[in-house]
Length: 502
Ligand SMILES: Cc1ncc(COP(=O)(O)O)c(C=O)c1O
Image (cartoon, rainbow, N blue to C red; front, top):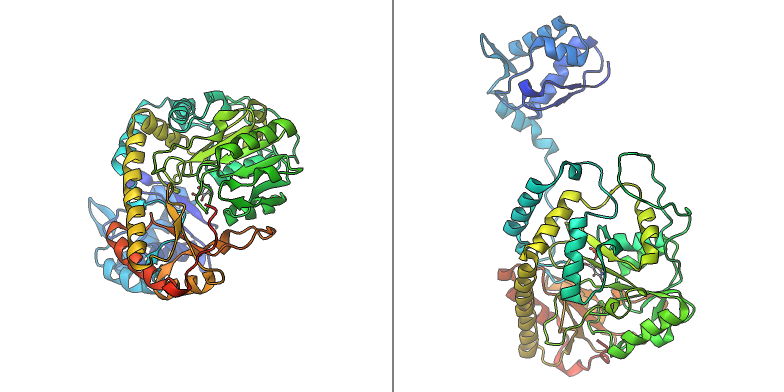
């Protein structure tokens, strides 16, 4: 007999998977399976076992087989049988269980760096647990039953409405709920835009969507795609895996040199805060890229990954507001709340909505629908704004401490890209980046140099610098991380940083 499931959940407290198989007949196999369940702790001391009849029915064996197995295990001391309280796992099975578990215990956790100054993650200790729970509770209490069925791939209307209002107010995005498609974050948005349409593996008549059919084999957008000469390597790799060729645009002090856009039909930019160098795209370049898109029938994919975190008084809105028909605006909660939530949004020109929905498939398969409702509530209740304001102050404080530490201990090192975001760039003399990253590692500091983000095909002069993420260390560990960083920086006499373009 093969593996069976015990379904007597009310009696045993939970389903229990028993592998009743192997040599010696069913009785011997059941004894082995129960013994293993007690020994491994899957059946805890004191747990009441199901009556013979129901376990026999679940496993498809004779009642006597179960009765004999129980009797044998009682005789061995694994189980106890008492009139009126049925058959239970013996209390004294506990020490044996622990002793025998030792060999399969998880290996010790790999230790991370002592000081994590890699860019990328927000301060995980500041996740607004209470506000999220309150929003989640309200969302679940008020949710209609359909929320717990298969989800519409467009995303919940409540969230799309909340985002329409929020993005207009906070980022200058001009849209309406029907132009927004919910996704799991920027990386997912790139996949939806550039990989061939997903062909659903199932058909369903119960999903209330109007997913248009699109020719499989063609993405919503096609390469080559112009990208910034320095950018997130992960996104470049993702595009390469989808067969999309990327062409690098050089950067200068005003951001990407969009006047060099050539035959591409799409360009990917981080206009609010160039990633990773840190400057905003100059106003003249913002209009230039829109002019290019209008003239060439092209489109800008705008990655607004940390647009909320601006510390100077100059607000930098989304380029999308200049021409909503020429920009695909993408945002997510990965910096503002947590990259673990996997929630993001595409704000689309009308002509792309159908294609993106076709790429997503017939049902929502990426973004949890209850989580979408919780986020909608968080935004609509004002708690999201409060959290962003609180985090902006906290990150500004961290940024100030970094700048002060450098002024005190390494005044020769120029720091750039500090007007916004969760990371800064420390400019280094040419040829010193690799040795400084290694020196940092010796001080227990994990961080990346600019080279990690450089497009392999760019002919831009190499820039030496450290990308310092200041959001990740806990509050009490941040000072020590800064001290360790300063110890790793090159000495004064060699310091004449590369020309800054951020
Ligand atoms: C440049 C850039 N874009 C986008 C994102 C957001 O990615 P995702 O929404 O897939 O977590 C990040 C990381 O948070 C990033 O560094």
